[in-house]
Length: 139
Figure 1: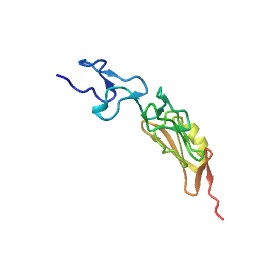
Figure 2: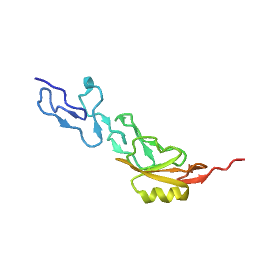
Figure 3: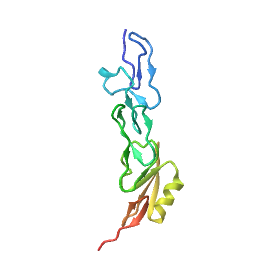
Figure 4: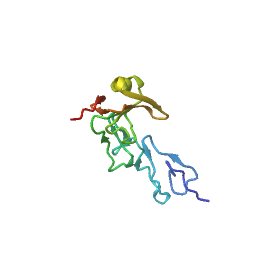
C-alpha cells in the first residue's frame, strides 16, 4: 500500500517503501500533492543551494529558485539564519548575549528567546538605530 512521505522527505523512487530526508537547508512544499521534490528552502535559508542567510538578513523560506535573504531595516541586527523580520528597526536578535547587551547598552533590555537566542529591545524613549539604543529627541 502506498503512503505519503512526511513533510521534509521524499520517496527516492516511485513505488519505494522508504522515505529519504531532504538535504540540509531544503524541505518539501506544504501541499502533499506537489511533495515530489526537495525544492523549498527552510526558513532562514535562501537561494538555489538553500544556504543559511548571513547575519543582518532573514528569510521566511520558500521556493529555492526564487527565494533570497532580506536585509534588516534601519540598522536592526539579526543572527545568521534568521527566520523572521522580528528584528526590524527596534531589536537586536542573536545567539550571543554579550553582543546584544553591549549594543543595547544601559537603555535596553535583553531576554532569552527559546530556540532562537537573545533578543534586546530599547526602553521607552529610545529607538534602535545602527545597532544601538539611542534616545528619541523631539522638537
